[in-house]
Amino acid sequence: MSNKFRTRLGIEILLKEKIDSIHGQRVGLVCNQASVLPDTFRHAADVIHEHQNINLTTLFGPQHGIRGDVQYNMIETPHVRDPRTGIMVYSLYSEVREPTEEMVADIDTYVVDLQDVGCRIYTFLYTMAGCMRTAARYGKRVVVCDRPNPINGNAIEGTITEPAFASFVGQYSIPTRHGMTIGELARMFNDHFGIGCELEVIEMQNWSREMWGDQTGLPWVLPSPNIPDVDTCVVFPATVHIEGTELSEGRGTTLPFFLNGAPFIDAYAWAEALRSFDFPGIAFREAYFRPWFAEWVDRTCAGVQLHVTDREAFKPVILGIAMVKTAYEMYPDHFQWRQNAYEYEFDKNPFDVICGTDRVRNQIEAGADINEIAASWDTHLDAFHQQRQKYLLY
Image (cartoon, rainbow, N blue to C red; front, top):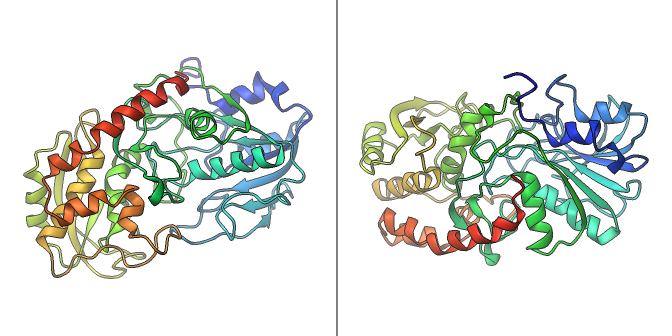
């Protein structure tokens, strides 16, 4: 796709056409390795640091580190000085999840340039929200440079986070698949959920809600180590639910979130059980794999590989619930909910943290029909669909 017709990112428009928004400001850039300018593949931190009219004083990095090199969840990254620019990098996945007053002492404005994956169960949204809360607290501005939702801006699906189950993968009451851009969510967090900071969202150009990430003409730079391409974003809202169990979601393989299983699974039986639901747009292949880290490291796992055949028809969230439900029912002597804490929630069932509610787990344990589980989301999704309308930009 030529540059004339490709999507233009918020960070491009900020630096080329709306530079007055941060001219002369002391800027704290919230970024990671995916924060690149698509024409040159140069990192936003380098470009902003060299800009004669911007004073870049601070960098803030989300989960997985500012370079995206830290593989797994709940592995904190330290505060360091960036070797390229010499600027201090504060990790917002460390002993703190949002900046302290000391960390923001040398900034006037946050610039946020992070690539989301279209799923609530992803920490970057809440790193942004934490910066917005501290901006409101300490009198700073926030400029969010919008980027595409890689799994389109129309489809919404899944459970809504309940306040009792709020966490770093679900701070606000939004569904698993929210169908919004990170800039639109910033507007919703700020107004509907009451953060109340001084916020400006730099809109994209040439992006529309039906577009998938690979239709934008933009390069894909993996936003975290286990999201190597847009196809992984498509299945992530399904198999992220596996993280709430002692099954493997394929971390430690070359197909994270596509390969799922455990040593006790009968691959053919599980694949057949999943086919029986007749979900549209998805096929299951019996698969065997041996993770080199994470769950079942160095053990041969049997299970399935997901093959998306029609992403427009595919409903990932209900598939993820069905995968957990069938494993729970077929392997009662082996299946376990995740035993370790998930995203630092030590007193909640990890599957409940992922779902943002204990209702789904209770339904699975009670033997509820999969259609009954999906139907229980409808009222909440209808309400969210109405709530989000005023915050949509495209």
